[in-house]
Image (cartoon, rainbow, N blue to C red):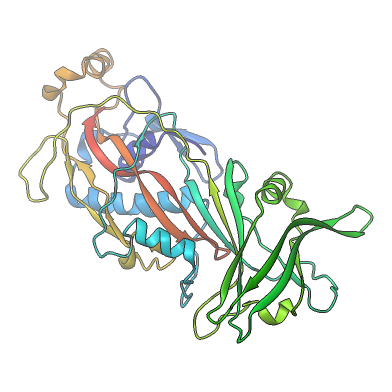
Length: 383
């Protein structure tokens, strides 16, 4: 479902209080459990009655929970209890660069969310970790099979770069190692072929361990277009037994498993026209439609699968939209006057929203970083 988030928020707030709310010039849609659309006009009552701030805060928090899971394509929150966060270079760089480990991180404002923008998360970086292969291969002694389950939300993305990171355990001697990475190709007849992807030669001291990086963009692009052909890689080495050098399991609570780092092209966002709106403090004695502060704390949700941010300022809208304030909205006022019983009243709802950056575990324990649209209410208004 790719619906304008402004319409979703507008309908959600009013639907929870069993009131009607139809944006001027368009019909807001809800979805029933069977997927059939339900017009907001079918809900009876006047939207101006949904103005209680405590109700609005609770509605907004519920909406955020629903919205995040929906936009990430998750049916329920992933269970990552006791899952250790790996200390790997790309992840450490992300956390440091975006200051996400801070208690109160300062985010660069995300792009505005317009009616034509995608409703779902725009992934920018994905860390996909080694998993047991669904079809284990019988390999020559010393070769290692590497399998990665690619996230489905990458299939429509334009891949910029993709690299396979492999960590070699520390050794007392200098490595003299020739490594070849193969793509596993399974023919319709069942025959298995190995297609060379990259080759590397290492002449390096290895007292503290070493990361080896392979460019796998071409292979990953192929697998994203043809997911059924993803049978993983095979790593072969001469000069040492590669299975003895690879860090496949967690040691001392620290994961150095092989992983694929994928960067995808950032999506361009359309800028929406700016509108004037009121900003109020929580204890303000204001009856008109206004934007109020609201901090969302994911730890209070029990959502340990969200790595960062742990909290952010979401804001919410509350207040009345009586017709005396509607000189700026002549269309809505004229419709109400022409059909007072058939039209819904104006509703205080988000009129401009922006994105936040999010780093999280998905259900397969991949780590995904991207922009989540429509998470911050920047401006409220009547419609």
